[in-house]
Image (cartoon, rainbow, N blue to C red):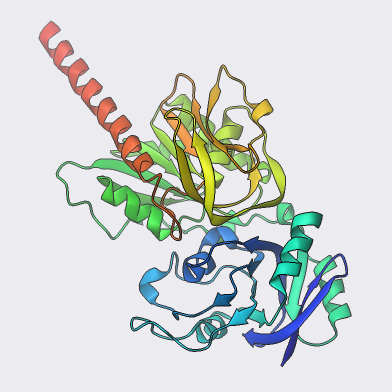
Length: 376
């Protein structure tokens, strides 16, 4: 069946409809990674978006439940050049077309994704609709879609109840971490566990008092979808956590919320960063780390007050801020994804750095307790 991806600016690309036999639309973004389509499609950060894959072949190795980053597919639709219906991996359980049909997500293949990507690069991200039928009607449906900043996407992907993460650390005496779930990926939780943390995950709306009521030694601010400027209630919670001086580590949306809590601004990028090979300069070490990225918003360097926050990482592609640390507080964050999935593992050390900060706090508390006991 013929299908289309129609953009709000009137551009129409025609191909073949796959996946669920329906129409759906959202903000159109392109991802430049060569592999990892399953992790991308199950990343909650892509909620409300139409994902265009620039890699020529998608679906080659099928779908395996163990590779998913969440329990469902989050993009509204998928656009590819060549869609592989066969599974060329012995561990695959079914093909990608079957997975998209089951998830109720349409896809369109045989699209000139290079031309579409250039259109998005030159004109900026825009709304689009994928489906069959009259493409002019799809253009109108794309124009009628709400803008990303008009929807609270975090509330649509966060969990509703708090609970411990199923995996447990294998080391003795792990650090106790509370995770604020703005749309957290499973790989992030796994990296925290592997770094020596016992993880408890909380809904995004959880207040600071509840987060700190238990044995919490640090709070992790997760990735997630949407515009951070439309989430003042979440920024306020991060501000209260900063005031409590608890160790904080943020990734992606968590980074942006921390920046806003520190008085900085956030802006929308022309076409975002979506890929698995973005070079980032670590200003502390001088090293270049190749990173996985997925964000449409960024923190302008000029909006940071150097008395409150300092830049720690910079993108070598466009010089945008990719990391910061709070002044006088045990709080730091990065815009990229150190857990990758998909992507390189150059920045996994950040999870261990978070644990080291919590251990230092634990040791300081023990020392002060001993001194107090000795004084009495």
